[in-house]
Amino acid sequence: MCGIKSQQVVLAAVAAAAGMVLCSCSPMQSRTAADQATRQLDIKVKPFGETSDGQQVRLYTLRNVNGLSAEIMTYGAIVVTLKTPDRKGKMDDIVLGYDNLADYVKNSPYFGAIVGRYGNRIGQGKFTLDGVEYKLAVNNGENHLHGGLKGFDKVVWSDEPVWKANAVGVKLSYVSKDGEEGYPGNLNATVTYLLTNANELRIEYQATTDKATPVNLTHHGYFNLTGAQRDILDHALALNADKFTPVDKGLIPTGELVAVKGTPMDFTRPTPIGARIGNEFEQLKFGGGYDHNWVLNKGGRGMITAARLYEPTTGRLMEVRTTEPGIQFYSGNFLDGTITGKGVVVYKHRWGLCLETQHYPDSPNKPNFPSTILRPGEKYETTTIYRFSTK
Ligand code: GLA
Image (tube, rainbow, N blue to C red):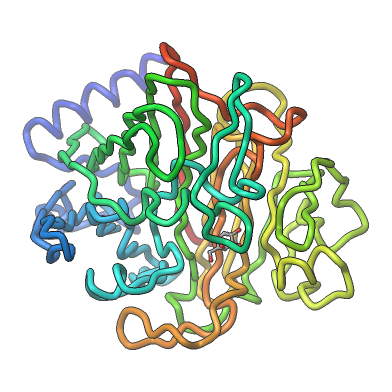
């Protein structure tokens, strides 16, 4: 770390300890003292109702020094709201969801949740590991989807606030029992959401197990950078991926990695999502639009930029960085106007999109895909960052 940078870090830490806010803004952006006093890192916690079996659910409100905020509840580890500025500084909520817990419990297409123990599908709900066949709960035709009937999106997580010099957050923990939804091993999972002063929602995933098991955790936020004003077809998307994993009719990968070049799956340059979504292309027919895993171009290990999403009318830009090898881009094809979300907004077809960083779907049955098996003594650790700016 260079001298200046390390000095800044020390200063920031001292300032945070003293409850001060350091502003490295340009003169245009400089704020009054009164303004600064209200712009501190902040965490608030309040009750958000209870589940039918009497478990109390809490809602955390995280705020950073720039006024961005995220509300996260302990049911499903769900991001309920995420407010970011447009290019004029107007804050809007850029994720889909509900106003209250009851609606999430009743019927949610995984709005804002952490999905697990395995994000996306496992073909025919079974896999063989170390010579033993495991049968999982089947909840999507003949397949297992997003952890089964009661996945990590439908359980109440334990919580603790996290204070850092440059971020606030909540650490959520869940113990998934041996045999839950058919998976082997007691899995200790923690997911830490951090809202940083660099305007990032950073998600750190960790897990350990006492028996070998597949693990593939992801965040299922539905983004709409207009503030849910209209569908997402004019959002421009770029994906750092030269290949994707084609699927069969049931959306199970065939096992091939196929080049996107010359197809509507090519997002190597920023392209409006609606530009080719209606093309005569079998994969788009199978998905009812985009609902596929892209193979990220990874030079080596470590974190890379996986996606950039830009909304031209508001100027909002979201960059997705991850340590994961894949990303599921789902264009909200199953939204059909039957769900009324926050603020009585009707979520019509393709009103939100998901960019779920992950290992490839059905990896436990695909020996040529990167392994998703976690063994006793190993630590599952992945990080994904959603970074917000405007241009
Ligand atoms: C994922 C799946 C989709 C769908 C959505 C939620 O993206 O791949 O098929 O299940 O979640 O509805």
